[in-house]
Length: 222
Image (cartoon, rainbow, N blue to C red; front, side, top):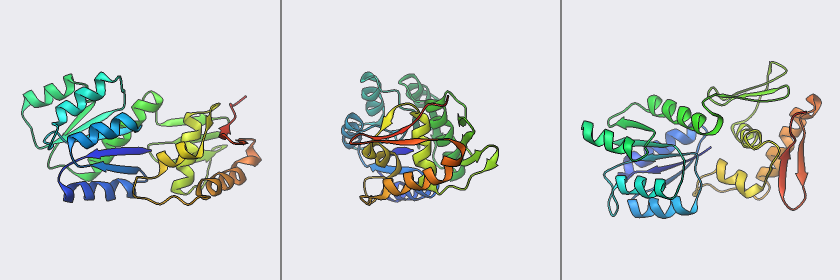
């Protein structure tokens, strides 16, 4: 899943990016409010981690513009401002959660997973497709109740396909969810992940179809 970090402190931004990528998220980073506003107009994310004290455009204004455009992406406000009035203002403008600096990385990661889960699957961490179950919180998969060994990228591809079951997903959409701006994507990488998934799932009758010229389709469970 893809996260945008909006943070002007380069050390903190780099640390957050590294930590979240190690937790198998694709991460992009904007360093001022204007850049964030531009990116959020053009790109789709599963979560925004937003600092308030930003140059060029305040975090409150970024949040206000985002919600005015009708975007429903979850927003976790991350800031040194701990006054009650600031917390209330952020939540009133459409923030989904609030974390005050300094913070512990495990708590940030847990809140990020919870917000993404709430935004995509109505709060449940379990996705099911016939005999296949994905626990998006614990990052575990089972097939007929037996643990299924998946790499982080394979899990990410399958998660997107399950969330969009019955709809075609193209390679660019998959890459957007799996990689940040500064991560190289091999031309055949997505094909390799899909091929590996097919080999692991075909015996259970879980089919990933290739729709020529369009992308991939996880057929709806009968």
